[in-house]
Image (cartoon, rainbow, N blue to C red; front, side, top):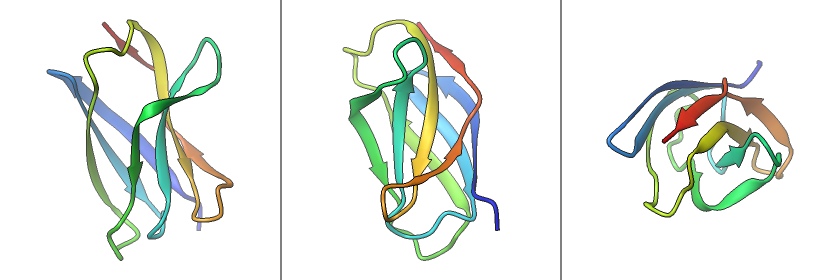
Length: 89
C-alpha cells in the first residue's frame, strides 16, 4: 500500500489534488522547493475515513511566487508521499 498525492492544478489561488492510500490523521503540507521547508500555512489534515479522495487547498495571499510541492505525512508524522513540483505566481 503505497501512499500517493497528485497535484492536479492551481487556479485562482486554490490547489486541487488527489490522494490514495492515506489514512485519517495524515497531514498535507505545502513545501518550498528552494528551502525544503514546509510553510506554516496552509496545512491540511485528512479527516475522511476513506483512504482515497480529493483536496482543495486555499493559498493565503502572502505566499510568495516560487516552486512548491505537496508533502503528505502519516498520522505519526513520518513521510508518506510527495507531489510533483508546481509553480505559484
